[in-house]
Length: 226
Image (cartoon, rainbow, N blue to C red; front, side):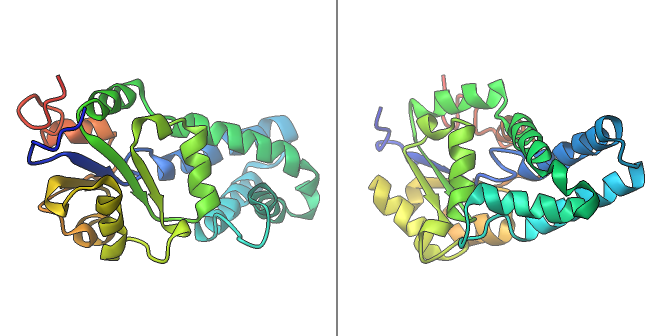
């Protein structure tokens, strides 16, 4: 259904730490892996903690290397973190990490239901900063593409948030004016100040459906998701 007769006809979401709890998922995955290293591979608790912290710190600084395959890069980061003594565990640990990460990152049933309701009446888009392969992997593994009319990844474009062009491109792609869109994100300096939309919502470290409820964005008198 095209909702262009309403003042608001499109909702733009940030991806990481808004729709999906990326940071928390990464932390929880490394905690689980630390226990696995200790219990299954007889790594001391101190060394296991150092390995996981080293991986997580490096991974967050550089989640993707454009010069190599995505999986090979992340295996390299794990191999380096594991060090000579445990480098032989790289393939096993990487597979566990990948599976567990997306399990922790998966959208809740409440979020999926909410997106289904919103997508029936509004144009939905994701505008996310990040390297192309890593961000598209999230979109595909989490199976969130069906809910959205448009997904823009900064790694595919000449600009990233908060550059206004990325928001303008989204509006142009959806054939709407900026005043017809709402931006929802977790970072004031990129998602909110960058978009300069009339209505923006800043969410911090809560499930998306909890934040939408807090701001009355899923109530019948706001976005009419009934």
